[in-house]
Every structure is written in C-alpha cells, then in structure tokens.
Image (cartoon, rainbow, N blue to C red; front, side):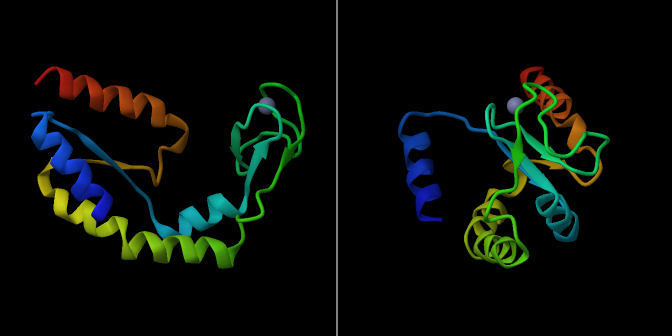
Length: 124
Ligand SMILES: [Zn+2]
C-alpha cells in the first residue's frame, strides 16, 4: 500500500492518468498452473504443462526447461498469503479504476485480451 500511495502522489503531482489491470484467477487453478510450470533455461519462456507441449524442452528454442524451486505448494501458499495481505488492499482501493481480466479460462489468449482492453481504453 505504501508503494501505491507513493506512486499515486507522483501521478497527481504530474497530472497523469493511470490504468490498472488485475488478472483474476481462482487460487486452486493458479496452484495447478504453478505446480506444472516449467521455464526455459535459455529464453525464459514459461510453460504450463497442461498443454500438448513435450515436457522437458522449449517449443521456441528447443533448450531444456526446468522447474523453479519456489513452485511448490508451501511457497505458493506463502505468495498467496502475502498477496492477500498487501496487494489486495491496493486493488480494492482502486475501485472502478481497475480493469479486471478473468484468466480462469483464457490463459493462452491473454495477449489478445490485453490488446482488446487497450483498444477499448484508447477509443474512450
Ligand atoms: Zn526457450
């Protein structure tokens, strides 16, 4: 919240209008995604291993993928707890200024969702 307040004072001082995106997802789905996530050791592309991608190699550069040390249930729950204690207050304080994006079903289509939301903002 302190970081947001600092940022908000900066926006007011320089008369800048900011838009905020909140990627909403069910915690159980996020746990499933994080527990199956692998990252490319070369290009850092992330993979959620529920697709048809062959486990162990990057589709883009063909290098080995690896599982992050922090993608385990204990660390994931700590991250959720930290988020709920800190960032959630900021999100709630933004009220109507926040643009929610439901990522429960659309994870592979996120870039297109962002483009769509940005186009809506620009046409206002
Ligand atoms: Zn790669």
